[in-house]
Length: 575
Image (cartoon, one colour):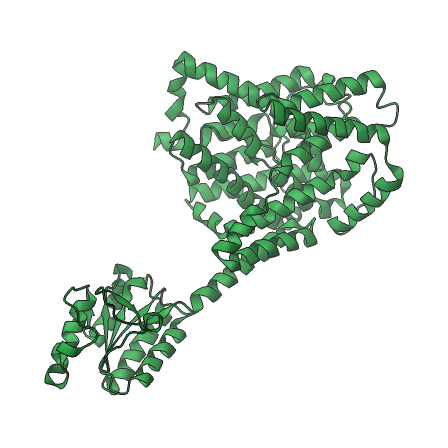
């Protein structure tokens, strides 16, 4: 129990080994070289001054490492969550522009509370409602939205905000065609060339830091700001103080949907990375403990003037590849950010805004992937539809990103319900190898007195009527029928509607001289019919562990009226 509340106790003892301590120190410093410039860029993506990104990169990674279950997950500001933060707060600042920072801090606090409650209540399973196609569609749309949102900073132009993101992009492109600030464009392109070139030639080099340092020095010596270029400007020196966010209930009500969406999307992003690293390092991963860690990191972020955070794909990969062994590497990264806040912020005054835009664009390029959508389509066409629809609606509704996600989740649930409403129903007969096969597929003869049917799905309210209709169709097609054997291997659950349909179907067919037998039932099926008493109504001797036993029962009851030796269902091998 003690280790559950303080999971860092599982690895803190390993730091006694010099090799482990050295590996974590190197990995932490390596991640910090990426974390500092990225957090500043993502803060601007969230619509915040750059120092708030550094605040969110200071304590949250430390807390997530201490109280999460993943040893290599690097938590902090990330692109998608930053974009969703801006989208959530945007509608509120129309009436209170001064409250933007306060809203972002409050949102982080709400996200953290929701994640923490899910973790403590062991409800991490709720994240499964965000299916893979929904996440793939949303991530691709988010990457495109993030990249296009930086066009103005890259070209040195700005336009007034519009209701939809695609309108803003359209007018920004028009402005860029006639009003481009060339020094800004060249600075941004230089940053992109450095980032892309180093990633290709020297992937282990701190490309983001090098691009930031090079363009900052160039801006300083060329008078970039005096020529009209936009720079980061003065960044407050010092660490953030602890200040609990103001609990403005009307604002919290307005943010609740966004907070839940960010909490789930952020956690899914964190878990997907953590699972990959856990598989490679053969470490145990606890989803609920990770929810606790992510929740606490967001609460701390809100308490120390940060905004919502999550696990980062790129920085976690850097952390893992740099040789991080324990969560202490993230502690080192957070402390390095603290050092930057205390002593290095004056050096960033001349950092061009175009460089931060280039950092964001290069970071999200890897998120845009068409292959997973194609793969989802091949696996199940309806999943491909969900991914494409989520992608399209997210782009259409942007900046209201939660609407695209909710639409995708709703569509995936509806399509899942539709698929399970008509599960496969097969009439079976004996195949030449002794197994039972679908007579429609293999063109097999069957018995006029006994029919074996298989229902490949749970029997519940959405498909119970379909099950009844198909059984009655079998009865209609076989006028001499006296026994129907239901192969229940595929029936995983039986709800109240399914039990009621089975009850009435058994009574109606019994009146017509037809008995229903059930074979190969699962425990949950039997538990239901025992609780309701249906087992006594149908007869305890009507349930069998094997289809062969059900056939023997039917043949014995038919007696001399039916020659079992010529029955197409007969075989020397039982099932």
